[in-house]
Image (cartoon, rainbow, N blue to C red):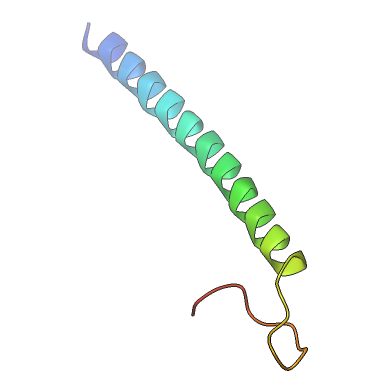
Length: 56
């Protein structure tokens, strides 16, 4: 009975990790797209130079 519970627990942990990694990949792709859009669509400042679109 204990080995069966350990196998089920391991399967549950691996399923959760796989789902978390998949979600993290999608979040990384969304952040990359937002960063690229901000890089392309940044506005020019008063001197005519392209300014930074982020604050830091």
